Length: 214
Image (tube, rainbow, N blue to C red; front, side, top):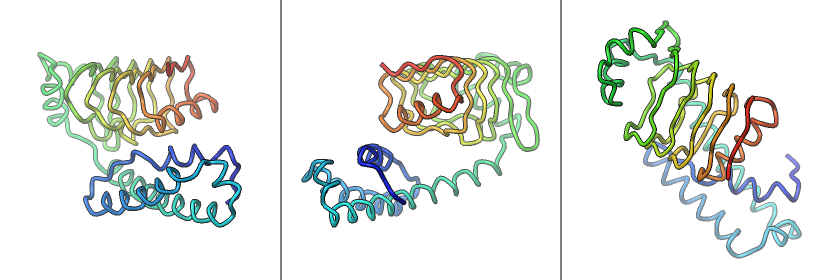
């Protein structure tokens, strides 16, 4: 696939910072990324672009990494879409989050279907140490507040947030670009990979409010 000169830096950013749960895949990824970084550290992006052989080697390494990443994402998506937490699991999660009456909270705000979970109102994990959201979560009618949280990723099943998405100072390293956000997005301190994806989401209209990355 033809690339433009300005694409090179974005391609490096997209290939960097991914985390595999499988140890062997992570090792393979780190070896590939180390090879890619040797090129980037030794040559400028202009030099890579102007050298046909170097550019071809760069593209091959990028392509290999992205195939590995995309295959892992597809596998995770298939697993995530097939799993929906039970009411009891949601109650247990709410208790770990720190909700005082987790049973009433889930009863009043969680709508659990066979293939998805919809939540009424906000999910506020600001500076919370919880590392996951309920599996099967597809909609949050309010805001998702993750500022300073320990969450690393947002479920691929989550397709709509009615309010704001606050990622300031969070550990989120990836986001599903098909996610639709009705309010504003705050992403100060996020990785370049996340910020680039958010910018594309804003461009195609998946972010209805403002996008703040600074």
